[in-house]
Structures are given as C-alpha cells and as structure tokens.
Image (cartoon, one colour):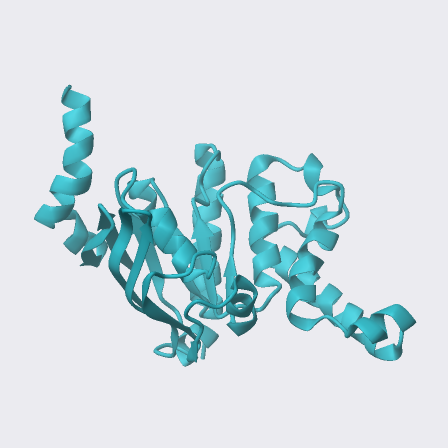
Length: 268
C-alpha cells in the first residue's frame, strides 16, 4: 500500500475563520482550510486577493487577528513559525533562498538539521550522538536530492545551478524535514515552460508517492487547474470558491472575480 493512501484522511492543517487586519485594511476575512494527508490543493485569485496573507497565516509568519489554526492536531494559533515547522509543516519561498556558496547536499542538510540535529553539547564536543545525527541527516538529504532528480549535482555549488534546478533544491530541503504538509509559494515564478513542466511532475509525484499534503499558491491558474485535485479562490480577502477544478472554473463568482478580470483587461 502506498504511504499516501495509507495515511489518507489524517488532518494535517485545520484553519478556521482566519482573519488578518492591517490598520484599517482587512486583508483576509474568514479564510478556512481543512487539509488531509494526500491532498493537493491550489490557492488562486486576482492580484491583491489576499493569497500571500493567507499563506503567511497558514505558515505562522503572520499572527491572525481572529480565527485559529491547528497543525497535525496541535493548536498553534499565534505561535512562532518554528513551531509550525516542528509540527510538520514545510514551505518554500517565491524568491529562492538558498546558500549559494554551499553545495546542494549542504543546503538540503540544513532542512534535516531543523528536525533532527544533535544537541548543542553533543555538537560542540563532537560526541557519538553528534556523528550519528550527522550521518542520518546526510542520508535524509541524499534521499531528498534523489527524489527531486538532482543526484548528479550533490556536490555542486548551489549558486551555479540553473534557476529551475535551484527550485528543486529548495523543495528537496523542505522534504528533508520529513514534513506532513508542504506549502509552495509561487513555485513556478521565473521558470521557463520546460522547467515548469518538470516542476509540476515533481510536485505531483511527491504528493502521490509519499502522501505529503501539498498547498500551491500560484498566479498561474492553468498550472493550478492541471495539477491540483482541489482549488480555492480568494477575492478581496474572502474565500469565494472551494472545489474541484471543474467546479471552480464554472463558478460565477470565480468568473467575475478572476476570469472576468482578465477578459476585461484583454478587451480594454
């Protein structure tokens, strides 16, 4: 049995009534997400819809003005982002954040250290526990790099890789934390069509084979519709649709808020 099927149904993220106010501006109001193992969800919406704010609420970067969020059954409302990561949530960034002068392996090992590093005392004294921890983290990192198809680049300087390969290194680093949920912020930004195709196949494979729940925040609606099992649409901070790609594309509120905006702009 595939791990994804075995763990299907276990709730990873439970967000209810999330609201975020900046001064007098309500950026997100009443956002909700129930994400289970094996889910692959896209979050889209026109510019200024609140996607980035919702993403930052889900990852603990922003504290909600109202509402609550649980990660793998732990109420982490208002807690620091590191606790979200420790609970099983990993994320990537729209702007790639790698250590360019480190190798691919060293970059990915940073993710493993977040979840399974030795204690400070063991590290400073180079105790057996430290050496065992480093071996395990290196093994996890190598496996993660292999999963994203970059085994031949393990020792290469990260800054020398193509932009598309750097994206894959970032995903490998997230996978090295052994997450229950992976949140991707504009993963296709800056990629050419062939790189985007490779990325989509990678996301689909990671989700299907491991059961890791995935949330993709993207401006590219076609990518989301082709990749995701379920799609949420935000408009002016509110969730206006949540369903299959087919349901969402035929929803009048989505056509008005998202497709209609593009059509009007094209005809202007």
